Length: 604
Image (cartoon, rainbow, N blue to C red; front, top):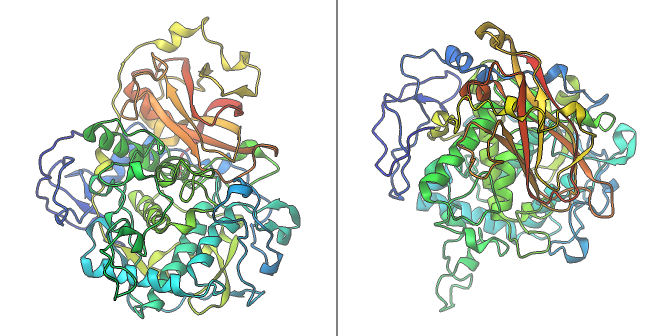
């Protein structure tokens, strides 16, 4: 694990690492985390890679194969058609899954206005100047004022205007909580769902693209860039203060003092226990926050490292998720970022006192909080960074993904259809990101117990996976021995294939937050194991957005890299791996249909 200290971050010398993008730079020093820093310190405006005199490709291949984790193309099963949003949006229906409609403070009417019913193909405009998306924790007062003005004007638009704040908030509900069906694909009985599959990243990229352009048009600034919440950087691991900053009363004649509730960026449904100076928990979005600053930052950095590198490098299906496939639920794998840090941020901001954890804690209402767009601006940045970490980190290339399409209203109130294939190049879309440090690149976990031989000691005590009757319930801790396909693999073997743990067809109540942890060769069932421990393989978390309660349960899957973990634990010669599943929340009705370890070919 990277060393953590309360000292200042050292001065760095930066040089370009990528000719395509300004996102990357080199450091001649190992950076340290600072829990106490000046709010106006702008020295950390570069991504720092601790790779002095190290070839980047060799580094990615050299740490046990998980930097070159599996390409799951031959595991995930492609759907027989590209998901297509309705041609006529009047076919939209009230949202009805993932939340208690009777207590829904935002309502279940999530359909867009039908001023136009048929979408026209969208053509990306010529780019004359890139919009730069800045880090929210480094905004100038002038930029904050401009952003507040743009949101203020959006909120002043009539509700029926498709560019209005209310209509923009409805978009997420419509696509995530059952308002659109797959009737265009011949399956009107199926809902369109942009979570837990490969649609997650491209849908949200297009969503923010038009949202950003609408804001820019409202303040007549075509260069306006939507800020990103820099939660992967220690200095950005708090709710951006501008969201809760005092703001003048809307009536200039009023004598009332500035108040956060007057702020256009304010949302009344946030967890007040998580306002600044509370540090976000990127594993436990609903945690009580009793960890000290250094420990929390350390765990956050390792969470990002694991999901960006250990679980997904050179592995498009693990990063994006697999294509939606209702005919083969065991083939579905949720993306590493989506089911990890993304879900944690949603739940951390949402108000647990609300029936549906509004706003951010439920997908139907998340789009009504300005924090949502800042979160997803950084999620979009994670996609771009992942692409540039390794030449093998490529986007999906199958036709079903490339030709999947969505409908949005643009800044001119035109209803347009967009395709995944047109959103893979952000510079062609007209924007880029202000650089920030990637401190998490140094945050590889460390083992608590090397060579514990715990798997061999558990034979005869813990059941082997073939002895378990599936599906297995997650209402209590589950321990199982899983046989490995190979032992003592050579360095060359690891370059050709990655060893991965798969949890297939996870069924859970989609109307409540759901999370469980996955431990490997852990000796104490997670009592002392944290994210910075090599034994902590990862976590699977889901924000409420789907079927549950009286309906059938939601279904998804997940995968975690093992190569690096087994190296660190000195367990490469073990025949079995001891897998421990620790339920954290909402797992009372949850089950898993299969657990297995596979060797998956690496991308070339």
